[in-house]
Length: 335
Image 1 (cartoon, rainbow, N blue to C red):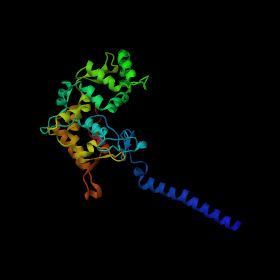
Image 2: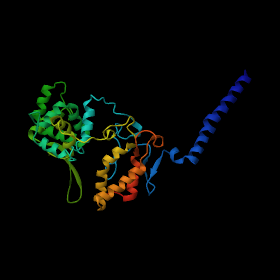
Image 3: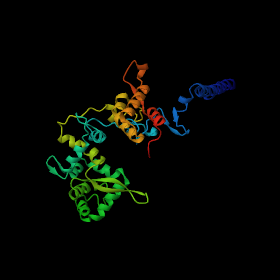
Image 4: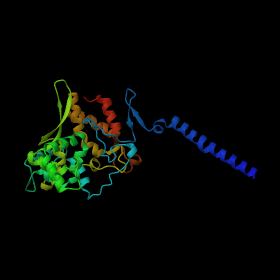
């Protein structure tokens, strides 16, 4: 018995040394000597040695000087990889895409439709009904509540509105006895209905103000134009203007990937963003937009690649790599 036990222990020790020691150590040595970049997460650093991101993980870029990645249902959080899982029939999907398209989509003549959305919105009428903001909130309760919860400033603004309109709140409690102490989100629809009556053709929008000392402050103001109006009400505008022919947009410009972390976009998507990127860099550098556009176009072509060495599929670019090339060539964009 002892002989069998000793053999088993010897075999166990041998396997532990091989599987838990020699094998992972060998892989680590091979990775660090032959594939150090890939083995350490494919991480990129800037000229100062500061980590800027991974080649494998998408990240958002807020400045117009940079190309933007695909939308992410995981908010580009590598620990929360996920798709949106929204069905085509889900209005939340339609709303998200519409908000992306509103400020940037163009008609067949190449003109932005955003100014038309603003003019239509300011008429304050949807399907012959007055108070367009109230109609929007009534039709899409979840979106109205999402607006309240999206930013602490929004919730604080509704809380202040509740104090100024105690009769409206009291009536809400009477109509909803199961909510005796309503919070800001509970009153979202009622708030927008009241706001629409008091501010026809306007929407509560965060506006940044800077005082004489350079201190910035964000205030919620009633606005009839701006990105909020262009994005939130684009879908309602589209429903009333089905005959307007719009230019097509690359599919991956408005759709998320299965992981929410795809670092690539199609070359077609990058070309769609090219005018914005080139125009912004040209303004920063005081150069002609066509010159910058040609330079960035060459950059895209050099960085584009297709699967199987170009034998299959369409061309893609890695957003981080191209944006690093832009920074290397043109420097940092203005703050």
